[in-house]
Image (cartoon, rainbow, N blue to C red; front, side, top):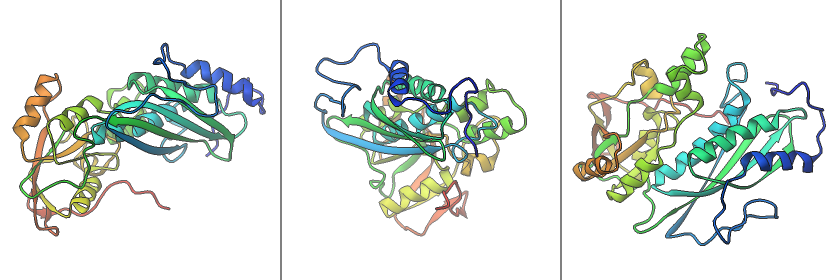
Length: 314
């Protein structure tokens, strides 16, 4: 798929000029004392508190975003949001990110970075550096840095038999939004926005870590696939009694649509988790079912639940 271009823009742009314009787009109003964001060969950050959490995501035009349906700025936004969601899944608070972009000549890099800047500002995860290179496709690679003070990060490998499984919200909104956009819905449609402008649940992730949950991950590829990944990592099975379907979504979209970025949580103290969410003004998590010790028991409403969700074909 060809990249969207700015017809007023020359096909070849001087790197320093482009970087200067992008630096103004992603610049933060304030930078913590002693830190250096951009302008050098590497960023300088103050020491991390507790465990340092690092994750990388790649978003490719034509794979993660349909250029015929969405503006290029959405690719930059989604690249940052999906990477920051990985911090939320560990219960981390963000410290910063670096972004690397490859794109064909003539690509509207400023529009792309406006999306990056918007997501960075909304998640309080500043852009501290990055890189540009010419390439055949538009690809945005985002590496995020976060920290987990105290007890450390929540892993997906800690679920135990008897734990309650919960999710932070109903599922299927992003997949329903893509379906609606393909049918002609406006970019401002509520479900379309759920697809093009996902919201990383940082507050929920930190609240869950504070509630000492056993395991957690974000639902990027669909519950029907990601839950199996959590069960595999924890060497357990599960019995689901509920599938919370978002208004406007189908049952299949809720199960396997992906890109909801809700958090999947396993805990032996759901009351404490709900109280922590209530105290922080967060929406109450929804019970899905329970973790069981038998690894090969994986059911929804008593029926075997096969793996189903989004998987890249590599």
